[in-house]
Image (cartoon, rainbow, N blue to C red; front, side, top):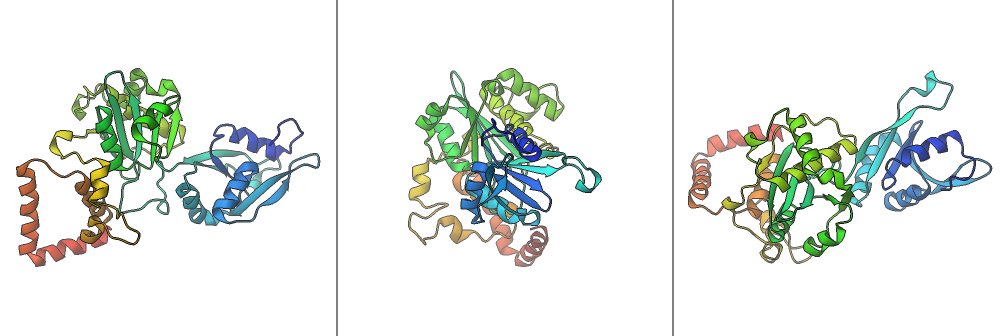
Length: 346
């Protein structure tokens, strides 16, 4: 959309807000509708299957437009996210009936594949992880956050270890430093949805400060991650990203845990695929997870999948799990009681 013509006040407002997130599809609230304009409208019409039309843009000019009723947001937003689009939701910040001027609008949320709390976007049987990768001098740092559950994890190590974590945690979106795409794709491939952030986000000082402020603590020793310099940088980058995407309700993120790699057998992506642990190699086939998943709560489904791709290494914790399984097997009445309670939670 050209800026060298005289625009209508609303179109100028749209462009000013769009400039804050030029890479995102903007849903612009206009009365009872969310509207998209210009290239956003073309993208939305194609993905959502809605009509592409025109709107006046000043001085006899028109611009592409596509829209849908505001109450249908929960229907259309997931489709855009699943298509790999970042979506900026621009709402009216005042009642149009109370002003004779242009209605004040602002971006209230930036929804991305890795940052969403919308029930219609999330699959309750799996985590919706956002990841960040930091390329350090001697090691690669990585962090994972599921904003819907508050689970926040970090680790660091060589590229092959980080590659295993990325494939096993299967994040919906990965952040890394701008200009490092070649390094990222050279080591981890191009199948992930990624987003680049400015280099200042991936500095130790900014990340540590962000983490200390969020957790309201003087150091990170209590989390057991103080020695993970590269992991800390990746973790701080995730919190910075939440600020950038207008996600301020983060009080449920109360801890940062180290991924204890020494407790688990490391499974690479080829092993996970060939054993068909969580996905079938054949169309219409079933994975091992699909066959044995009898869980009845979202938490249980996510935990079972985690156990599947992170098998225990040591004998004692394996036997501890088996003892619990045996206990419930021998006490069906108690098992059914627990199942009833879990049904209510789920």
